[in-house]
Image 1: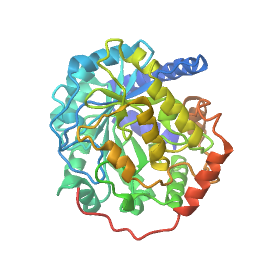
Image 2 (image 1 turned 90 degrees about the vertical axis):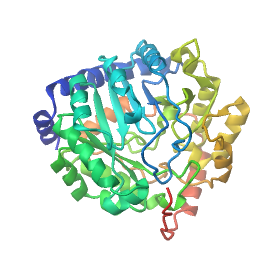
Image 3 (image 1 turned 180 degrees about the horizontal axis):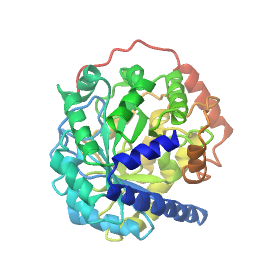
Length: 426
């Protein structure tokens, strides 16, 4: 698998893009993780990866979206973004996720990438605004990988994304990226309506045929103003997804990312481990993209390093979450999230201003933490990489045994299959 992946990547990707990836993401990324681990040992926290939602606007209306896409446009100005990235670079950071809304609606996106040739950016996009000209400019800059979201076959994708012909326009943008020689990925939010279509070897083989270099399976999380809990996976389907990813990593020549398990298959949350935090389109520093509460903002004159390092809100969020679950705290314990928000006087960081009401409307449900269902990595490359650079870094050392008992009880309680009736509305 690995030699075939390396061979086709070397043949299909631009040498400039490959060099930027190898140095900015590979070598410098490992150094960034080592510096992070040293900070953890000193009891200091600054995440090695920052995720920046630079704009809230989007050209689609996807089911279950938690971003304020229907609100007036909010965006982080270019000077603030540049200052934030420069500040993070002082800690060794070189990798940044760029999110929206739709990042390609941000007029100065390419200027942002070009201003930091010593960094690497992953752009989360629906792909529809990537023209041949934009793809060629991304190739010239060389330091970004588009991660194009595809939510199912043509019928399912158009329904999930809220508009007709979404699937075909997305594939057109994907093809522009591949023909330009960009390192290109495809992301899928696995849910009830697409699990059978996209959780298959034939789908991965189709991505390989198209020239895609990596894919990212993440599971649908019912949060936000229009929750669709009937789309969420059951525990057996979560295990099925994990087993599929582990098996296909050793079988199909495409890199497969996941963000919720360590090398032994134990669940983890990147926010709890301190690996990443999220910045909203208003500049608010949130625990993660779906936890839309904040005390601090990147416009704080102290700079983002001191602001995150000294944040009692973020520190308490990590520690309290770790004591109660290895999974997703907002899914399993929305009551804890509300308590943390009130305890610290955190503000609702959405434009819609309904995040607390949404929390109270949530019913506790299982997440990726399914005790007794761990699926360890089998491929040596993924196992070594995760063991040293994507583990829990001791974040869960004080998690009491009763937390696992509660997780098992919730897992059992909610494991009964229910009919799937996805709502058609966006």
